[in-house]
Every structure is written in C-alpha cells, then in structure tokens.
Image (cartoon, rainbow, N blue to C red; front, side, top):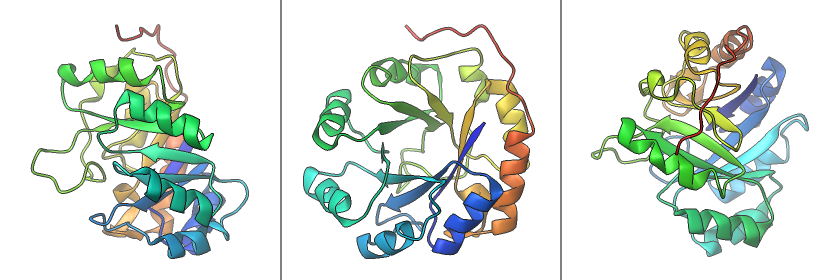
Amino acid sequence: MRVKICGIRSRADAVAAAGAGASYVGFVFFARSPRGLTVGDASWIARGTPDSLIRVVLTVDADDAMLDQLVEAFPFEMLQLHGHESPERVAEVRTRYGLPVMKAVGLRGEEDLTALRDYERVADQLLVDARAPESADRPGGIGKPFDWRLIRGRRWRTPWMLAGGLTPENVAEAVRETGAEQVDVSSGVESAPGEKDHDRIAAFVRAATSVRPVQMMGQQIR
C-alpha cells in the first residue's frame, strides 16, 4: 500500500507525511484551492522534503509556460494533471518534460468510466477521483467519495490511485471495496481547509496500510 498526502503547505507537513510512512506528497498549483501554493513557497518546502517521498506537482489545465516555470523552480518527480487535459495533451506533457504523469479522472456514474480507457494508454498513473459537481469552483479536493462499487473488480493497464473523500475513518473500507493498492488524501486529514492535522495523517496511513486489498479477478474497461 502506498499513500499520497496531497495539498501540503509546509515542511512540517512533509516531515509528518514521511514519518507516518507516506510514499508521496502533493503540491497544489491552483489559485482557487485553499491548498494552493506559490512557486516560491513550493520550492522552499520541496527542498526540505525528506528524500523518501515522491514529490508530485498538481496543476489544472496548465500551459507550457507554467509547467516550464515549475520544472525550472524546484525538483520534483511526478506531474499530476487534474483538469480537462485531453489524452493528446497528457502524451505531449510526458514527451516534453520526460517526467511521469498522473492523470486524474473524476467519476460520478457508469458513464464516466470510459474516460479511463483513453487515459490509461498515455498516462503513467491514473488518479481515480470523485467528479466535482458542475457548480464547484475546483475540480477536486471536495471531500466527497464516489460510489466505490463503480470500480469493484476493475483493473487498468497502468497503476492507479484511489482518491475522493477518503478519511482515516473510511479508507480501510475503501481499500477492501475497491482493491486499491494506492490511496490519496487531502481534506480528509485536515483540521480546517488547507491546514493539515499531523495526527490525522498518521491515523490515515495506519488505517490504509492495515488492510490487505482483496485480490479480485480484474477486468479492463473496454
């Protein structure tokens, strides 16, 4: 089990994530998010991040100029595309920067599953998230899960990570229901929007890693 703590805003958050046993930390670059960072702040935090962590930069429909700025500003190991980026754009970003790309795909109903087929062909990882309501002012971080039964028994060609409304209280159930081997959390380990609670980070990692995912005969979406 690998855990990603997304939306960190301080070196202390990164140290707490590493101490708890997380594998990834996420830096958010989206102005409307309460977890959004400036490039300068992210650079300072990233340079103090424990070496055990994979640093993931989250952007939403960023253009090349923005991505160039991030790549030049500080070291990180993965790009997370969390907007409306097309499969062609995902492939373009992978080629341009030579970095692994994780593509977020929001689910609400069966009709959303087909998008995963397109992105699994071009992304290094998939983030299977809850689709935000049309009225939402941001594409993720809304603290609501989707119906986990939608992906029960499903598998894709590329590694994937479960996200959307996960908390220390429900992550074990989510892992058992979906068979996820990677999980992502942001608001579920906060005391207030954008304020990470280090005790909840530790509790989340303990809960996530305490469950051995049920090995199910998977099926690829076609």
